Length: 119
Image (spheres, rainbow, N blue to C red):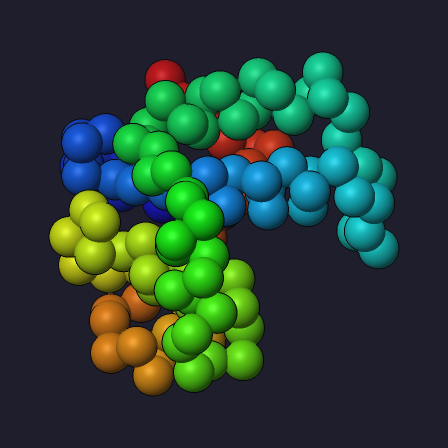
């Protein structure tokens, strides 16, 4: 992940408003490995991370188009629908298998948001 941040400009790295909402939910949920993060902890982490990306807005049409896709994971469908908006060439995801049918290259990031140290 460091390579991606060091070698790519913000103008070529994208994330969606849906992915940001998903990240917030995950960070503020207790898991078997860690306690939930507070808003005071999440906000600075996200601001640092989001400074590295261009944010793609999710529209109602994107949601409806995603529902028409033939993949079981509706959130992945929506992300796939968003990808042409920015001429996406690949997707970073922890669920590579979910994007196989979309015929777009995927890569699995090794990222622990809470441990990111941006310089």
